[in-house]
Length: 262
Image 1: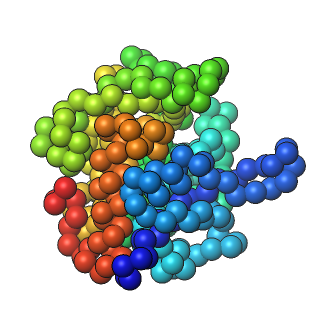
Image 2 (image 1 turned 180 degrees about the vertical axis):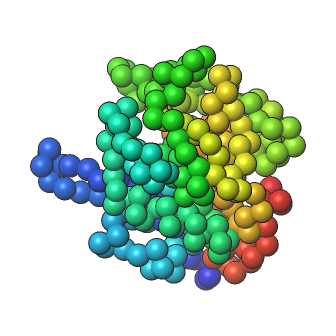
């Protein structure tokens, strides 16, 4: 990597319609801002559709991947359950790209950071399952985005996440309890193989995970740290660590368990 070349972080895009009828691949500006301004890397929007990209091409083009949030959910057939109305909208094309991409990155040690839907993708890719609507479970709170208000109000800090003593996220963030936003309807039911739940909301909902013994940066959170990432005391160290992992990969240095060095 030359001195001027920033590591490339592939940002998983979402299917969208411009003007209600023009198909597009979209990515939130706040994702690009967090990657460029906090992680110090070059954001590259990926059309998450296997008709246009392959996992092999993506891994050769990008140094790391940001698995973004998105309104469509992972299709329940990916974890052995039939779809119901509670499961919501789906994006099978994105499933077809991200799930094998996660598994390939884990095996190769290439860094990735999952956010919200990306958090759920990581768990499903590793063989885990999801609840379609956690607010309907006894004792659970409503983690969904407020239906009204400004962007700032929708992404406002709303609850505490308790981190495992001495765990990856505790060491990275320097605190056992952190405050986060919450904008999701689904959540982890059973953890996938090698998926370690490292943080929980007060109601027991898993909020932070990593892949045990992964040879590279393999973290995911259920909240949205991309919002106000430059100023938020929880978001900033997450994206800084992710950027460091991407730089190490780009320089050919990330071939040892990065998580243990956090």
